[in-house]
Image (tube, rainbow, N blue to C red; front, side, top):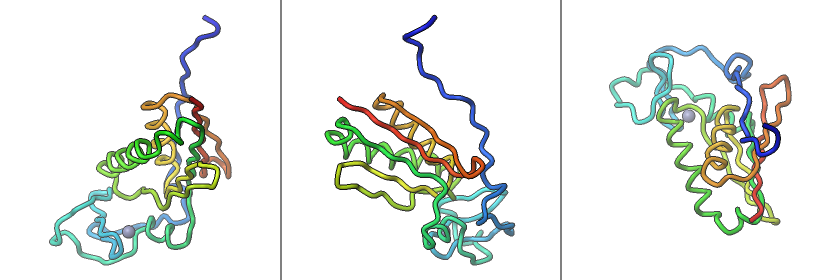
Length: 163
Ligand SMILES: [Zn+2]
């Protein structure tokens, strides 16, 4: 059927990690002295108990945030956003928490609000910017666009809804 097609997004294969300049090989039991996350069983965990924390390091996400180096940018705009800003900030926060329960490393580094009412969200991973954009899209509809650059290791995600 032409017209009225439900918008779907292409399957995205994330190459995350492989070419991330902040990637490091870590020992099990490494933990971040800045944000407290623990690296164990090849995954990052929040709220790990002290007994598992063996080797102090600074995690790649904290390094990126310190150096203002982000792999994903999500830009939200439109009249709908202006009227639902708090609600949308909560969607972002909840989705970030949901994603970090699976892998604690990626996170939102900062959120900027521009003079014309846009929200710009900077993430330490490509995948998180995409996930956040999708969460806003799923909750609020509107239009979601994904643009890759830098050999697909950096992404910009745009969401827009006018009332
Ligand atoms: Zn950290």
